[in-house]
Each structure stands twice: as C-alpha cells, then as structure tokens.
Amino acid sequence: MNFELSKEHLAIQETARTFATNELLPGVVERDEAGEFSMDLFHKMGDLGLIGLPYPEEVGGQGGDYLGYALAVEEISKVDASMGIAYSVCTSLYGGSIMNSAAPVEKKREVLQDVLSGKCMGSFGLTEPNAGSDAGGCITVAEKDGDSYILNGLKCFNTNGPLAEYTAVYALTEPEKKSKGLSCFVVKKGTPGFTVGKVENKMGIRCAQVSEMILENVRVPAENMITASGDGFKLAMKTLDGGRIGVAAQGLGIAEGAFEIAKEYLKTREQFGKPLYKNQYLAFKMAELAMEIESAKWMLYKAATDKDSGKSYTQSAAKAKYLCTNAAMHVTTEAVQMLGGNGYMKEYHVERMMRDAKITQIYEGTNEIQKLIVSGALFR
Ligand code: CAA
Image (cartoon, rainbow, N blue to C red; front, top):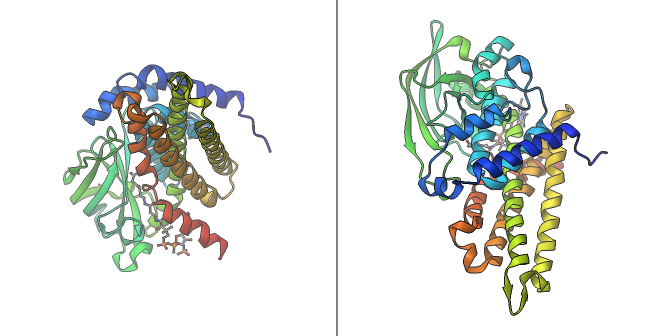
C-alpha cells in the first residue's frame, strides 16, 4: 500500500491549484450571482490538459489516469464547484460513455477529441422526468429508419446541456425490453429536432448550465449508436461508477475549500480578547472536520486507484461518493456557523459552498442509492 502521490500526480495537483487560485477565484462570486458559465475558463482548462487527463492519447486524451483526474477535480472544486461539475460531466459522463462503449477507436476519437481538448463540451442524457433514481425507466425511443435512427423523447437535468456540442443520449431501441432495450447515441448540437428545453434556476452550482433536452424526430446516423442494441443500461451504470468518483472529488474539494476558509478565520478573528481557535469547542470542531475530510479523501483515492488498476470499482466509487459529499455538506454547514454573520455573506465564499454542496448528495445517484449499491453487495 502506498499513501504517497507520485511526482506526476503532485504536478497535476499544482497545475490545477494554481489555475483555480489565479483564474477561477477572481469573479467566482459574481459568476455565481449571475448564473453564468465561463467558456473562456473552460477552454483554458482544456489548454492545461485537464479535461482529457485520464484518457489515451489515441482518442485525444493526455494518457494519464483517474487518480490524477480526481486530484484535478478536487482542486478546481475547492474554489469553483460549478466548474468542477461541468468538468466532471465532460470527462466522466460524456467521456466515460464513449470510452466504455463498443465504438471503434476512430469513432471514439472523432466524437471525443474536441471535448477532451476543451474546445467544446460534452453532456450526458440519461435522466428523464420519470426516470431519476430508477434510471432503467427511460421512455425516450430510437426507431431504426434505413441507415439512421429517429429519436423522440425528453431528457432532464442535463448538466452542460445548453452548451454541449456532443451529448450521449440513452434511448430505447427495443422498448418492449425496457431497460434491457436501452442503447446509447452520440447526438450533435444543432441536429434538427434536438433543442434545449427549460434551463434550470438552481440553489447551487449556479454557473453550471443544466437543462432539459428535447428530442423531436431527431435523425442520428446509425454509426452514432455506440452500443449494441440493449447494452445501454450497463454502459450508463459503468459510466456512472466513474462519474461518482468525479462527484466525490467535487465534494471533497468543496469540503476542503470551506475548511481552509474556516481555519484562516478562526486564526485571525478575535473575540473576548483571543483568536477564535483558542476556544476548545471550535478547535475540537475543526479536529472532527479534519478527520472526516481525511477519511473521505482516502476512500476517494482508493476508488480512483481501483479503477486505474483495473479492479472493480462500483463499490469503492459508491462509498467515496457517499463519504465525500456528506463531508461537503457537513463541513460547509459548520463553516458558515463558525464564521457567524460573516459566513452568511457572499464575499466569504462559504455560503456558496454550502449551497453547492447540497446537490452533490443528490446527483449521479442520491446518497440513498449509494447505500442501495453498498448494501446490495453485502447481502448478495
Ligand atoms: N456496472 C455494470 N453493470 C451494472 C452495474 C454497474 N455498476 N450496475 C448494474 N449493472 C447491471 C446488472 O448486473 C444487471 O445486469 P443483468 O441484467 O445482466 O443481470 C443490470 O445492470 C440491471 O441491474 P439492476 O437490476 O441492479 O438495476 P436496477 O434497475 O435495479 O438499478 C440502480 C440499479 C443502482 C438503482 C441504478 O438504477 C442507479 O444507479 N440509479 C441511479 C441513477 C443515477 O445515478 N442517475 C444520475 C444521472 S446523471 C446526473 O445526475 C445528472 C448530471 O448531469 C450530473
């Protein structure tokens, strides 16, 4: 067992940390208030090689690994969790759908390279109004017509939906088989009939753009079906295993970001003639949070390492997602409380982090679904 990060991993961490501090931090409060996503900043992350980190060079990636990618999402999310999820959806959910699929390498490269270089974004179209936790309940259909498929349906809560050049859309090619009849298609922005529906007005991760995606007689070439007919559900599940590592890294980053702000505040803010940290109640609170963060972190790094070493990572990813995102909610809530009135004010950042943390317990499988996955394996 090795608890040390390699030189390469430390370099990735440093690159992402410097970018987050120098480029994401200025303006993060204003972007949150306006609910605006910065494509310029996303392009810069691409230029730094962050988006394509875990994928091979032959498809346009950087040839790195998932641990390096998790470290980068963590650093980005310490400062800007909206950018953290936009990044994670491009890499884990869109990129994962393609990489885990049966598509030939040329096809993978064709539909991945511009996303992995940060030129444009990718999105993941699985969830529907009546298929949330029960992802197998999708009713979007794809009907064969010559050398194309015609897609009809409605996807919702699509992160990056309005901005994405490419979306991995999950649709039933054999509706009578329900989830066993699901397949996956790459649908390009601008394809006639593929339009953006309601753009969501959210409590947190306000800069990430999340919307419905409407499919009305969308004609997609058959070569853009990247699974065998009926293999879509398993592809989505496998992809979400990797996605949960991304969300865990986002949650961990949020927790660490709020922890650092609280620590600095307790050192510098004086009340009753002494710095706040000299109150044992607050020092012990910070000790508890430090232990919670560190244990969640090692679970995340284990999940990423399981994936990198070719082991099954469904279980470790579910555990990491649960622990890191619960840490995010707990630490940010305590940070707001420890900063008192200032914690409630936007310029101190922790109120945004608390709002951002909540969704990490919900998306890419609620934390109740993670318990279902973990308990399912215990009693199989
Ligand atoms: N990897 C590969 N295959 C898997 C798998 C995995 N992790 N999990 C299940 N499967 C396979 C099973 O082996 C089974 O195969 P067989 O039929 O051959 O036996 C098949 O899939 C069906 O499995 P289940 O019976 O366990 O499926 P289920 O319908 O009971 O669902 C579930 C299981 C875990 C609850 C699943 O539905 C789930 O993960 N739900 C949550 C969905 C989710 O995370 N949605 C988030 C969408 S993205 C998002 O949040 C928005 C965003 O943009 C950020």
